[in-house]
Image (cartoon, rainbow over all chains, first blue to last red; front, side):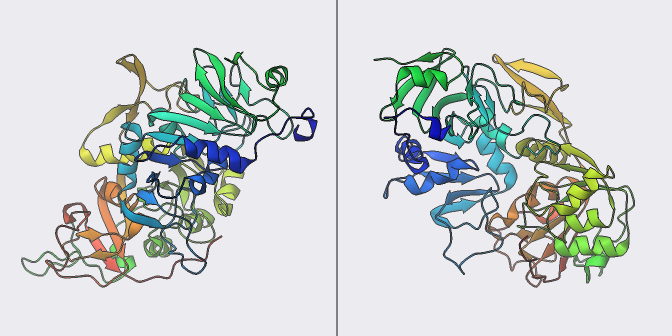
Length: 220
Length: 237
């Protein structure tokens, strides 16, 4: 797909997409970053902007990855990678971490996706026919965070659509996604359509329509 | 509840070995096992279960174990009949994948917050609750659904254990516990949810009053036995 882009289109790099997500995280926000592409987001948060990162295994205030040799084998993030804590962070039980999630205390969660529908349905936990299901905290985050946004490539590497009219993959939650950040565009989900908020340089409406399932609006 | 040693009039929940700490665990028991990934896993207590020989277990844990120790060792030794967990698909979950593929272990996958809350509800004496998590998904199909304030919620039932095995950093002989960072994870919740709760700790067991009451995370009322058996953490997968 990537090679099949029209001449003149310059898709954003994944770092740039992560930068778009980070730009929209306000100071003071409590944010859960999902596994996969969203893990690129924290390093794009501007220095000095205090955004508090939540980990569902029981921590607020995740810091940058530890320096080599500085790992604590029991201090890990939700992706089970070695973690650190920033000053002001705190630990709590796993159960309390989910009180924060389903209780609506998280301002934003940034999740990866297999598919997002025009009505904001999210499919990000299982592929059809997958032998071994594993859900983790995906359904809790999608159902509980005040604002659910998705960071994803606009299509799969094979060119299959990820922004669709109806998800064909098993759902994580219904009607929860508010904004999708891709390498081609940032799109809000509003009244059963994808509404372009920002487009990659050289993106033409006709091509965006080709690579986006579901209703598409491009105001202005 | 069932203190190991009974000096006259004195609460002493210390067990001298991990094997003694898990005494009485029976075949067919439901065992809540603390830990998230390799963090907070009661490895020594699980080793003792293996040594003691109980089998046909239902294990409730966040993950399906990885490498050769912990829940993975129970699976390898075919002691687990049923696994209730949230995320069984982890790198290094070789023994789970093997047993699952050969059809010798049943699997129930539950959203993580629902798993945790089902255990909490058991500890709080609440038989069931409604949660927004999983509503409208096929994973949670078949649950009783009820609408509150225009939104669908699923009925979920409490998940108690016969036994809870957890890991903490410090304990006193009354069973009060303090944890180490995110190794706390399921410990405080599972401690309240089982008929017999056993904690292994990585520092020598203190006397009452040695732990700052402002810092105690799990009150000893939930804890039946504590054992100090320092154990090196396993190598990563």
